Image (cartoon, rainbow, N blue to C red; front, side):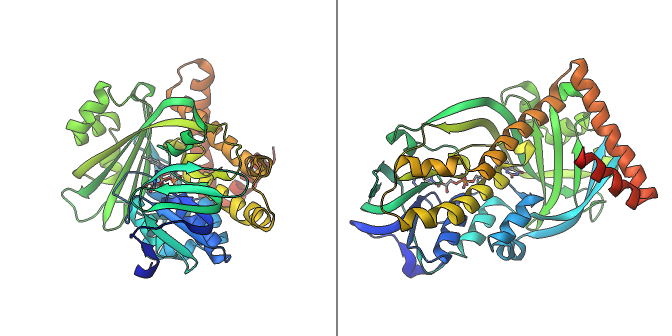
Length: 403
Ligand SMILES: Cc1cc2nc3c(=O)[nH]c(=O)nc-3n(C[C@H](O)[C@H](O)[C@H](O)COP(=O)(O)OP(=O)(O)OC[C@H]3O[C@@H](n4cnc5c(N)ncnc54)[C@H](O)[C@@H]3O)c2cc1C
């Protein structure tokens, strides 16, 4: 991003095609896609550099293909650490191995890599938006210390803490308050030069621990750990983990040192208690919500980025061109984005996966105990078949998908 596109002086009555408030991952990607399509975009964020806040740190699965389709995979692969194998462990034994491209990267580095892709058509304004007003023709955006600007369309990509929506009568429905707790921290090997595996996922062993999984992977020049669990941040286990991370973790996952190697926890421990929320009363003229500003996700299910990528792709390629070509931004027009079949399917899948991960990890009734045993037993059996005959394992997987 060049200095001439960075506005920090007072900005009075400036008009633009599209104003995007929030330059986290969702807002920055949307600005890249719309800017490349030739629209005049103003992207506004209160921070020039995204602060070191804890969010997604591992990109993989459908997220890679979606980024490729948006033409934004290359900046990720240039900035992140790529790895192709994850060893999956439960109860000290290998469950199976995942062979697929993944990228490890800290969130502020990810956002910086994407902001560096903003084309000339995008102006980046550093400032806090403190008021918005919308109509079918012009949207008004007040930026603290900069004055007011107008736009044909306002995109709110303000993340989970969005308060601007309230000005417009948009509220948030709490679907799963305090749904999960996530810790992020760094590891270094103890007593050896390196760990036994590049990346490892270790699933929780006892339902009473509430641990979904611990994900260990390279990011920047460190080994990063993301621990996903279903507990309240005030409970004694969480407190003990913050005070004695290694002892508390190895007591819950006794096979960890044996399978990954001895380790020390270094640096600060990040933590985040996630609510699952969805925006309500958001079918309004002139404004559209994307990313966490629309719906938050369970970090353990790993769907937040898939969701926001679907939002960006569908909004920027299927709806904005038509909306901008026509005269007015009616609420009915905006609603077509929220009713988009692909978006609705993705949003619904994210909610279902959040419930599934929660229940698979914590439920003690017969139904879920059996399901849990079957889930992990099936993965072990598939891994065994894979080793004997990969072709047979593939056929079985296809059969499972077809049924
Ligand atoms: C701990 C944790 C772990 C996660 N792990 C995963 C994972 O493994 N896999 C996965 O897919 N997803 C994961 N997620 C979810 C994923 O990180 C989020 O879905 C994604 O980061 C949301 O991006 P966003 O752009 O919508 O919001 P954000 O990145 O939060 O960006 C919002 C931006 O809006 C700006 N802003 C807000 N209000 C204003 C204002 N008034 N004026 C100006 N600027 C404003 C903020 O400064 C910020 O830059 C995780 C989330 C958390 C919290």
